[in-house]
Length: 351
Image (tube, rainbow, N blue to C red; front, side, top):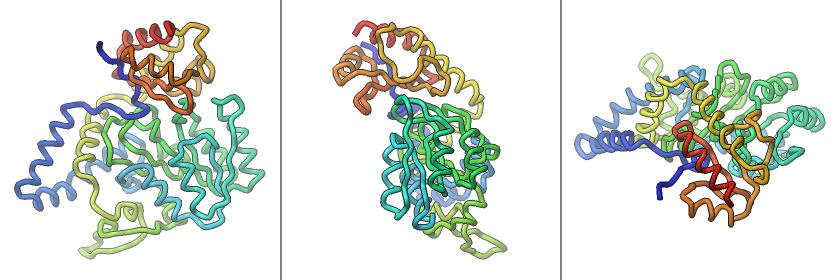
């Protein structure tokens, strides 16, 4: 039985050739290790920052290469003033919500109305009622696949003098993010899902004005800048890169970015949504889907209302998916084929 992988929202598959190339590079550490490492960090790492900047509409000086989202968000939260009023969505990803309760913040949570839709007017009402300083929010919700309009949310924050921090782990690589024109202050994401780059590598995008207003409370050897031949330590996004990055993981990420540079992110986004729509349109009426059966405000994640029995049934039929929050989550990647999506819908309908 050939498996159909519909689980990128959990972990994205890495191309075998990327692993082979990373292995080849890593083996150089068995020879002249110091020379290879020094060259890689001096030459290859800056290249990755420029590739990230090009892909996500940022300047390379606004990019930090970090281990993962959880590291990044905790580091950023540490820089915020105590007793800040922070707003979040009550069903957002635990790695985004949980740290808020350990930072001496006043945490406020808003809810959806239907189990799926996050209404911008709800966000603005909470912001004004509770005098919010910071909004932290996932671009795409990990359970349901609901996708917020970043520009609309950023506009709300700007007119209410709120700083906006976005978790893009479920959207980076699958949906367009234009940081420079977004109005967002900070974007953080891990690369192991829709960027298909494995674990141990992530990205932080941060405006220089945010660094200036909320200086990082961490640093290390790699936080220094070389200015006029001297090592200078001045607050910058490099403070979030205190030590060596994961050479192996970022080597894979570099290959992903080089390959994706040949593909328009809007075309990838369109293909993902087309696959999700095909699946939704192919489901029988009896199948319960959380949220409306359209791709409006939806990424390529579909959340089926069903128990562990449904999940186990799908696994037994070769449909690789996740059981999350008491229901079944399927996620469609642009590498998936139309026939795979139709087969998955057929199997769900047969349950």
